[in-house]
Image (cartoon, rainbow, N blue to C red; front, side, top):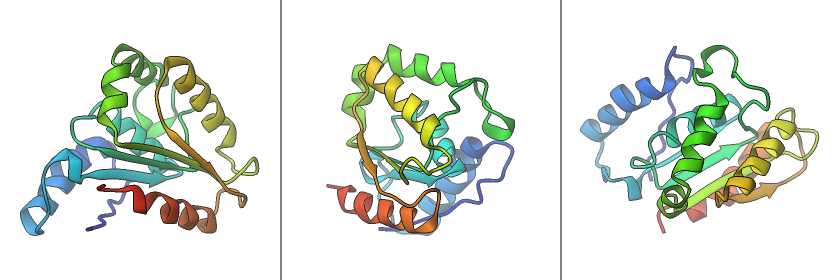
Length: 162
């Protein structure tokens, strides 16, 4: 498994990932280039980047991991996060069956109620449940911290590329 970490501070994370990062990795490393061998995961704001990229592009990623994150409960999203949250929920609603069949693992984890993103994630999961989106939820105590994210990665990584 090759792990690639983009900066994430660009004006358009999705464009940077799709137009620069993925092509660079595929040209310079011996990797399989199909969606079944590609995962996208992120923590905190990286989790929002993951959602904002994977939902419009399910043809590119078979595995999605969102750690200590969730779309803003009140639209629109601030700053660099681009689209209005409702746009994503509409995509999910329109193609629910396609998303459920497409993602081999849609993983969401949180650092308990003390995690600063907990309420956003709770509301997002309620919306997913209402739409009928399948996902795996994992929660551990610890808040919005590295130990939580290490535990999330420890739980998520063995599910990849099965």
